[in-house]
Length: 174
Image (cartoon, rainbow, N blue to C red; front, side, top):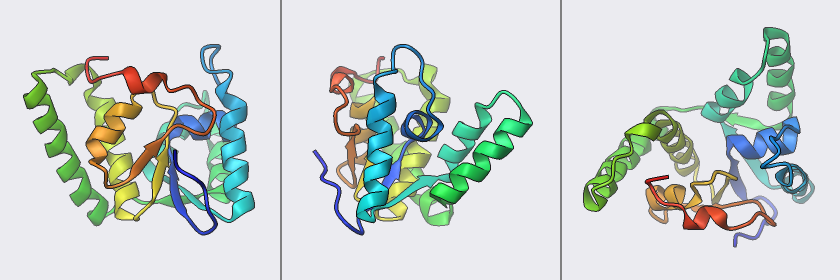
């Protein structure tokens, strides 16, 4: 488990921002609201450099029901977090991750086509974090194991403290 420390660089995934900053969750994830909020608060308190990739910003803001809410949420998020661009160096890491994904898929004879868009976004998020030399990505994503395998130990991938480890049991087929 990753331990937050002063001046560390960490990346927050979409679901952590939605639960901890926006304060929204479906009934299956309601327990994650407070834990995600505490993680964000702890990052601020300790002086942790917590950022969100531009892909995360797009995912979170695009979930708004109208333009006014999207504009307010965009303003709030960009005041609270540094938004990291998906730049050329991140694109390079994305290409490496996507090749890794294809290699894992071939070796396991598994089809990931049902998750293609989500996997592309996940790879872009991981690539941005690697490009910025983040120490850890915090995700509540049920595919924590997939994130870890794609990241190839280049970056730690963790659920926020207190989350169940159910994602550890999932594999590419889910």
